[in-house]
Image 1 (cartoon, rainbow, N blue to C red):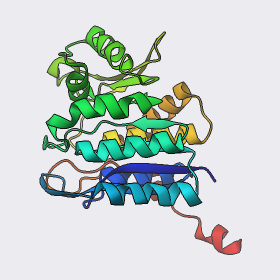
Image 2 (image 1 turned 90 degrees about the horizontal axis):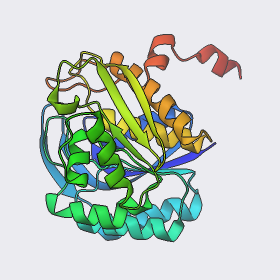
Image 3 (image 1 turned 90 degrees about the vertical axis):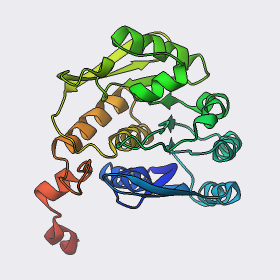
Image 4 (image 1 turned 45 degrees about the vertical axis):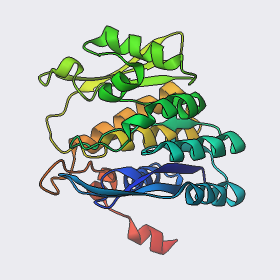
Length: 278
């Protein structure tokens, strides 16, 4: 079985962060592991508080995974502070895993900040150069690239700027309608490898229940890379998976409900007769 490690913050409400990552890994048939960098008290409506794990403990969690089990892909999510970024970057340089997918989480779905703004430069200098792929959404890409994004051309320019920071590939996610066009009927993502822009587009789904979509998408990409798919294949398959998860999102909570990571399982059920028969 292929093995995927997520390095990110937790979400006690289960829709995003480590919890969403592990659900996504399981849905893709890979073995999920985690190194928690922050414990986040949040729900579908707000972030109540964040308690960061010490860099020493982050390092020990990563060591525990690599020294015993091994890793076929790594997904990096929320890194709230520069100290966590520096620790994660140092350990990834030490172990040099393949298939590093970076989701530069800066805000919760409700807009609450999850990354210290003063840490963005550390993210750019220490973490981004390690990525085989970085997956910023529009607001995150604007912060990293230092520019406004109002159309597809801007998305391409931002991808070019971010690629120059040292990562191998950039995926600008268009789930946030470009230019604030809430009426846009297209959810467009643009993948750039330094040579070609590849577009992945689906019809935008009219729902408020999108908590954890970025975490889920990047984790699905990492899982598919671990399974041996090419980057374009991995992004395409992950796009299809997260779109289904959004289409059948769960109306849980009073805010932005979570996506449905196990729609296929809930729809068709677990074949217990077959399992017991084995």
